[in-house]
Length: 375
Image (cartoon, rainbow, N blue to C red; front, side, top):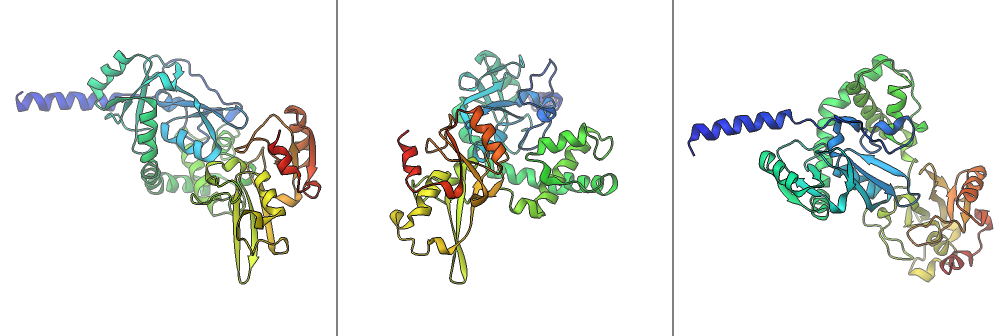
């Protein structure tokens, strides 16, 4: 092939890449509820803008749908909220209809820019169509399992890559908008970034803003203002990746929706232990030495106990919480004591999910966690 011909092909191909739009051109299907359904709950990206790379999955705990603009977001939420990967649907980039991800053909790492980070995917129901896109845009056709593996392997790089972009461009933009257009905003009112974006966009808490400015402002508030605020320091039970539950041996970070912790003062410092649910935490609380050499883990040394509120996912004081037992919602270890910050929320959950009883912390007996194992 002549050099001039090759250059012409490259010019034409590059133009095609630049022109590829991920925006919805047909009526989009939004799976989440409320006004916030327009945005990803993980990154705040607008779903219709990146519709041709979107995914849908259900939370393992309650079966609610979550919608994402990229495979990286899907994996981030799998770690953060515990989604059911087997429930994953992906958009067919050609027909713009959702299909079972396990049956799709994925074009991995083509020359089309990734929606988030360094790994990009397009999915297709038909292999012939996928191969046609591969000829134009490069990349490789792989299975869902392989696409997940590559995205997971590169997830830290993807987050780092996007963080740098946000720091250089979007955070400064968002800060300027905040200082110029906004009054005080109580970020503790929001559980996820898409709820904040809904108030910015629909509630106009900072006036009329474009989609670009809404996104920049939300990112700045969520990642910068909230991260540095006291509400974020206590918002969730924070678990490191190497922490294992001393009762069952499971890695707790995989189950953030159920995480619980006990803090013990010991000499001039403080220890904490993390658990993948209240049930295992209570087993340890009543008899720590049964699970190993934890001489410091005496009740008199406890400085605080944290559990994860089922609805808000915020860290709450276990000794002030209300717990539902016998419901049809299961944790990582099966039947659980499911925590709530208020008695009314616990009662509502009990009625909605066939719960047997609502208990205060001091009503939990040592035998109860073990009895839940047999049900």
